[in-house]
Image (cartoon, rainbow, N blue to C red; front, side, top):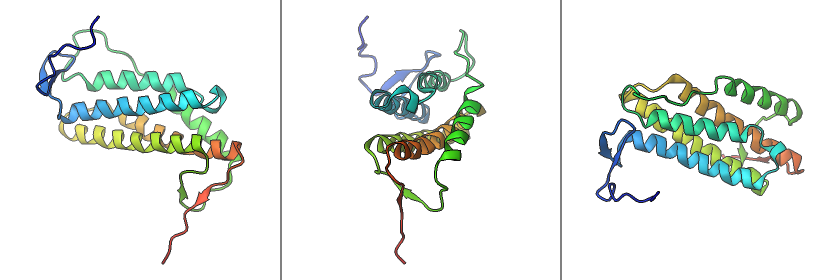
Length: 180
């Protein structure tokens, strides 16, 4: 199978329905940013032991499923991947477990206490951008609520995971001290 088709050489691409749209369309920006999050999570997967990144495969799979739903402009005439409805709860429970051990957060923190946690912060900010793109798309075309909820929770998870990685590696939070 060839990867290149040459059908997008003029700035157009096909959605799952077969309709052709500009590559600058908000829908493409939304699912393209999900792909960015997923790619950056791949950096984390390659850098962290599996016990430091629970649910990695489930999260990445969920992002693919959500991207496919965003790539459809209308009703599906074929089976679409289902969402893992339990995953948000699993992420919440994991955050609660980590937060019971982590020092109380009383201030904003700066990324960079540890290289691996810095990758979490980059993934978190890309996830927040994806969430903003999906919310903007939702203003124009209805987006499944589960996608917005999942992205919101995933960015929270990545923040707490970054703190957990710092803590596990003996790196204290880098507290932001504003100058007034």
